[in-house]
Length: 255
Length: 255
Image (spheres, rainbow over the protein chains, first blue to last red):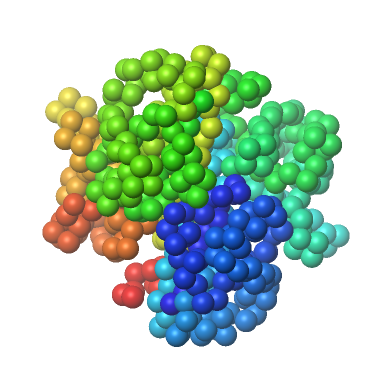
């Protein structure tokens, strides 16, 4: 049997059910697609499971997926995944393969950036348009479609959750200065998003040192230093109701 | 200090960190806004915490919010909440009150229907427009705005997560037959949604007996019996990519 277990965003976000299952695993794999699982979390898991999980890259997992799933035929194989296991779409590959091999697969959910970011922002969950991801740009590939989606949401009065891409080669998240540069280059005079647009920056969500700030797009750079090394997401707010303004005021005021 | 702790959707979805905190609580409150927490989950919590949590209705919590928050001045007060604590917008009232009384408040997240439903559907998370809730209708109050939102999402090729309202007086979720009746009455000839629209029905998400089915709006009634007593959400799918068709096929095929 195969288990896909979410680790959430914090340092002890895996669920009580997940705690039970990892203790009984024959194979314990930790998908370190991102290196964002703090050492204390990895240590906590090892202590709970009574062994070190075997770290695998997402690429290895995908290349070797037939073999990994086949192992689950007569063993209990647990794959630990940052965030919620099903929000990262790549994991549907695992579920499809398990289906093809007729191997039972159980998913144990965990908090996702998708719901945590929206909840922590204080903004109305019913007013979020489609989420986007800012991709890294290369000399040859400079996709701008994420700005079109944000523009469309803004024109509809909707908020946008903006996730930042991961540099897979160097296993690090996009920096705030990089996000700003790509956004500044992606906007045009016709964009609803401009250099003056206020952006919410959400850092280290789900952890004790989480913080939420609001700055203009053109000023995001000024936070480079304080946000260095943190896991970031952005929200581009649309129209704000009175209740949302109240909540946002609370969220942005110092504790 | 005040803790808002999410219980998620399953029967052991609270996190490892939450498990530690409930053991040290001076006051342990369980918000039974819904009666959807299965008895085995309530028992599990009582066993872990070493005491029965005090059950409170959401209305009592709101009416008595100043007092409840004030208790946290010199005690550790834990409020357990179904799903994720911040997705239910009412809980921002608690956070605002804690801020006003200058009482530190920590939120421990849990899986939300918001991310679980989208993940389990196999549909692309980036293609969901704003979520809606179908409200109960009364003789005097028959709001149709949720259909306008679904129509708009469909016109944009987007999927819609459709949550079902809760009958607060009787503490029970909306039945599939009620959801169908309200939807059938809310659509018009101009709606993008019609009686022929295919609807995904997601039942008991996050639990062992979860199931996902697809039926036409006009046929939802036919599932009344098999879905009786289950916690339901709906998804109205928009345009489907090839990859989404593949995943949806897997999701809908029997295990």
